[in-house]
Image (cartoon, rainbow, N blue to C red; front, side, top):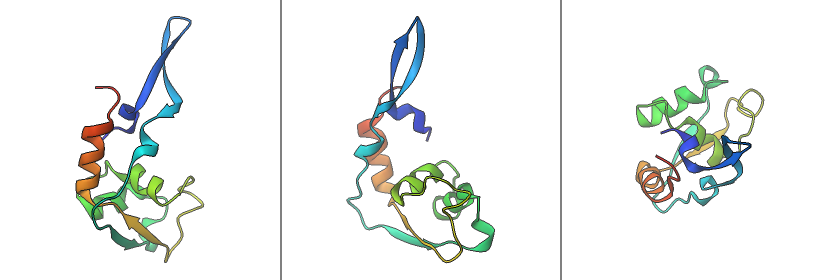
Length: 102
């Protein structure tokens, strides 16, 4: 799932740009029971692998980081940190409801 699909676009001087200030990413909510995952040594700097281990795809790494307030994968991921893993049903509902662009 491409997170840029949740950004609106603006045209500036004839150039179409993503609007990073106004987007639908903040509208993600968890209605279904979440899972949890404890970060291991081999997960450091590899949020894509955390996504793969939980969902079978690397596509949701950014959503896991967003839900857990992790802004810098190089310094904020620590061994032993317990991450909240959103339920896949919440992810699909979010995608269906809030995709801003196709």
